Picture 1 (spheres, one colour):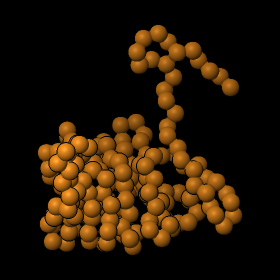
Picture 2 (cartoon, helix red, strand yellow; picture 1 turned 180 degrees about the vertical axis):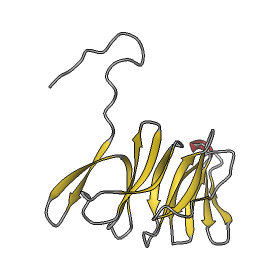
Picture 3 (cartoon, helix red, strand yellow; picture 1 turned 45 degrees about the vertical axis):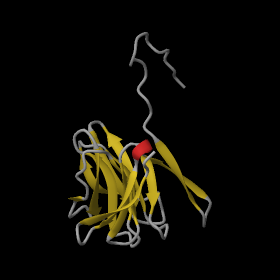
Picture 4 (tube, one colour; picture 1 turned 90 degrees about the vertical axis):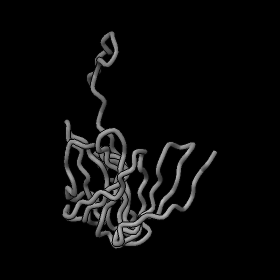
Length: 167
């Protein structure tokens, strides 16, 4: 093993290793290490969606099988930061946070990478999307001390406020 002493000054030294996570295959006890972050499973456990960063690009990837050692499919790739992906109950769509300019918005895309659509357009951060059904999505808006939760109807294009933390 080779190690280097950090150089003096801020922001210098060895680059950080890319993030990884492990997936345990219960039938055979095999553990597979995947390079990426923010893993999320489909409700039936058959599909994993996660984020991978390479250089200036961020990719949203899915492993569409119970075997995590298979080659992942790129659902979305671009310079914008994405995070916190979530699979729809049937595994046909992926919701995620995307940093459009100065704040996070929520977007959805089909599992094959088609029909990407922005769901939110709020000046505050729109965060943590979770599917309740194929066409209903739960998300939160705002900073933690003033967070509000909303239900988004993806077919009708409407939203309903569910909870407002007024403290």
